[in-house]
Length: 419
Image (tube, helix red, strand yellow):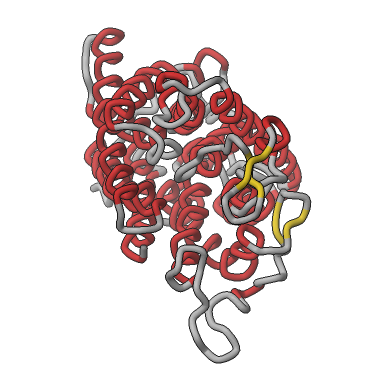
């Protein structure tokens, strides 16, 4: 589990390279700093109140847990006698803290891709701390901490389709939502937040007129490689044991990712006449996103189908920003939101236990739609409130800074010393 946690933590520097390479040379450092800045802010607040809000026992309305119950990880690591407290899966609870903080970090970092080249670094840092507190921690509690979107007897699924005996004298939802490693909590969450911010903050100067070409495609490929490697901690680690479920998640993750690359490249070939390295890297991420909620619920063949569709959908979706006029700079919406929605809902079709294609009925599909829709509305509304609340502080850098390059204007640095 500590190895898995380390792999997931590596994903955020992977995002930094992925986004940095896709940016222009005058903004690459700022783009990478947004990921590293998110690491610093979220790792700090997670220790203070993030774990308590996400996984505390004092539930508040099924939305979040009491942030003061385990504030500063009190009563979380060791007991009064100095013995390590066992967590839900038998190993010490502090290991789960290590694992879960990495999810909060990367979810926030993913949002930054929609804001490239135009946002003040200080405002981004403040937003990161506020957003993760008001949006991410509650959604993690709702899905994974026994809250409203979990399979608990008080969750939405139980209210829709009733409860059943859990075998231990308690009740659980008769059809439980499935989010193995973060389709709702991570990807739909980050994707809709990115869309809302892109709309509220506005477009880059020259959007629709200037060709924003990636300045370093090897960086993009390196970032995709680090993400793919780290994603095994993300998905296989979410089995919380070195067992068959972890192995299945590993194989499904590779299968879906490979198929998504093929789906994206085929779409490019038909549409543009060329298959590109940027397309291969983006297709890999689309497949990784789609399989995240479904890694433990699908067969490898089902994962191939899921990934291929994700690659096609996201390859088509990244062009929507030009049609509808929102500046999702590095395609967070097209990749993370679209493939996250597809992966979450597709469990209702491809799930080997409850999916329609495997003899299940409609109920799992309905539940997956419900949790996806709830996450969209919940995150969209709260992100908009936060974005407007921070407007007095100022979101945008000056027009001069945006023109000369945000690296120099915000950080007094340049990525490349060109003579």
